[in-house]
Image (cartoon, rainbow, N blue to C red; front, side):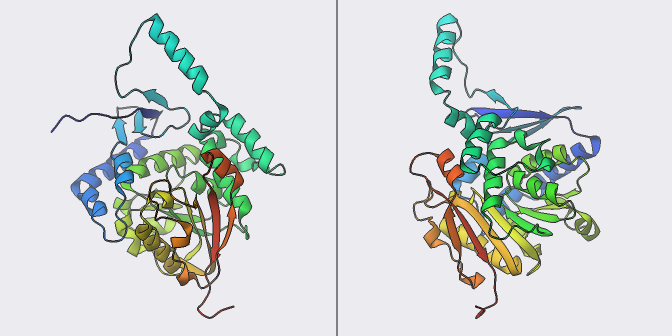
Length: 342
C-alpha cells in the first residue's frame, strides 16, 4: 500500500443503490482486482487504451458506505460536487478573487461544454435544429447529462436511416446516455457496450437511475448465458469482444472516444464493428475530423473497406460549435453490404 495523490480537480456524484445493485458492483470490483483486468486490458494487442485514457480511467474511483455510493472522476457531470486537488486559500481577498474569476469564466459556452446548463444547451440546439423536439420518453432524464444528450440527439437527427435497432453495439459508451436514448424509444432492444472497466461504473449507475428495473450484465457475469440472453444491456471489456457473434448487430455507434485513441486502435474497432454488423446494418461515428491528441488520427485514416460501401459524412454543427473554434465534429455513417454489391 502506497500513498497516492490527485493532480487535478475531481468530481463526485452520490447515489443510493439498492442492496442488489451494491452487491453486483462490489462483485464486479473484486473481479477486476482478482483477475488482474487492468494489465489484461493495457496489454491487449488490438484494443489497449491510449495513455490519455489510462490516465483518465486511473483517476476514476468508486466508494461505498452502508447506504451510499460515490463515483469520482475527472469529468464534470451534472449534480456532481467539485473536489479540489489541493487546498485553496481562505479569507475575504481569496473569496473576492474567486468570485471575479467565476464571473469572468462563466461564459455560456464554458457552462455548456461542462454539461451543467441544460437551458443554454437546449436554446443553442434549437437554433441549429429549430424543428427538433425532445421525445417525451426522454423528458424525465435528459437534463441529468444534457451535454452528451444533445450530441446524441444530433447524431440521431443526422442519421440517414432512423429505424430503431433491436440490437446495438456501442464502443466507448461512457455514461451510457446514447444507450438510454435508444432504450427509451425501444424497450425491447438489447445493447452491448464495450468500454474500459472503470468507466462501466458510470454507465451502470446512470442506466439504473433512469431504468431502475433494467437487466444489466457486467463483465464478470457473461459466463451465465441465460442471464446474457435476458439482459437489456451487456457490458464487455475490450478483452471480451470475441464473445460478440458475427453479423448480429443492427446498429453500431461511437461518439467522442475514437478521437482519443491511436488510429491503429480505431481501425481495430472498425474491423470489430464490420464483423458484428449484419448486412444492411449501419455504423455511425461522431468524432473530430482531426484528433486533438493524435494528429495521425483523422477520418481519412479510418479503414472502412470491410463495409463494402461508401461512407457518408457531414459536419455536425451543434457539436462542432460546442467544441470550439477550428474543431469539426463529423457525423460519419456507413452501411455494411456484401462484397461486390452495388
